[in-house]
Amino acid sequence: MPFNIIVCLMGLFVMLSIASTVVFVLKKIKPQKDYKELSHRVKSWWIMIIIFSLAMILSKKVSILFFGFLSFLALKEYLSMIPTRRADHRVLFWAYLSILIQYYWVYSGWYGMFLIFIPLYVFLLLPLRMVLIGQTQGFLNAAGTLHWGLMTTVYSISHVSFFLVMPKIGGLVAGNGGWVLYLVFLTQFNDVAQYITGKTFGKHKIIPKVSPNKTYEGFFGGVIVTCVLAYLIAPILTPLSPIHSIIAGLIISTAGFIGDVVISALKRDLGLKDSGAMLPGHGGILDRIDSLTYTAPLFFHFVRYLYY
Figure 1 (cartoon, one colour):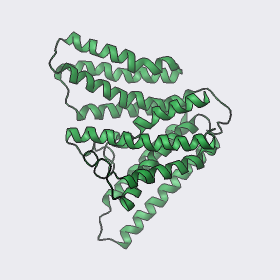
Figure 2 (cartoon, helix red, strand yellow; figure 1 turned 90 degrees about the vertical axis):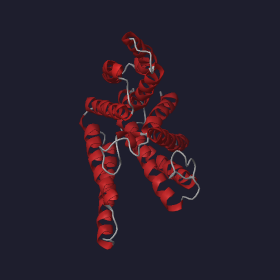
Figure 3 (cartoon, one colour; figure 1 turned 45 degrees about the vertical axis):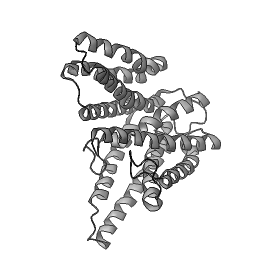
Figure 4 (cartoon, helix red, strand yellow; figure 1 turned 60 degrees about the vertical axis):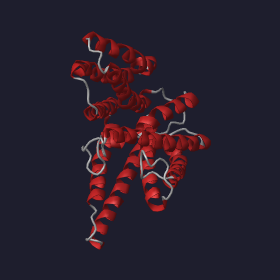
């Protein structure tokens, strides 16, 4: 494991320690206030960071398995939110099987199949399996639900893990794991930055009918913070040039916002506040990786076009 990765992961634990200390002090200073949600959020971050760090440190295979399992949990949560036809329960087996196959292409480094397997083969074959069942009522809705879910929770997220099998290039001081840590850290920190700046300065709502708490101040605050961080940590983790790191910050902050509000629109359509309850203080898996569903493929292809 490259030293730069270890240093950055240690930095995350230091930040979490500071956050835990702040929560503890707030509880002592203002015991009348309810800090339960904040406390749950910090505790969940501890668990997520520990699991993520172990996956990054142990081996490439473990890291790929980790993201594959993340896709499985996300797809399972997605399908639990959306009613499916009884007849399609047999089709779901093939949807879940596609996760194993997609991540096998990642592990093997077969870029061509990784790129087209879900958008082409799964897109064409799943409706065939549905047709063979012989039930046409609700066919379009069921097919669209499955395809969109697989593209979001499996195809998009698998781009994170493909960084791990990319060819070695000059200037990648932290190894291929540097790309992963750079992307995941900026995506998650962008969410935090937009939330904090929105809570502190937010007055003008962007799309109140979809996400009432999102404001222009929060969005632009997140963009600025993310771009600055992208510029500062790029030399530690990536070979990105200064201008490319700023562009990467713009891509990640903007795409992260879009991913967040798209999943918010899905939940609002279904009448749900959170996608699940697996992560106390955060909601479900989809609530935590919603931004990553957009940032992962866009950042991946940005990097591949410029550096590979």
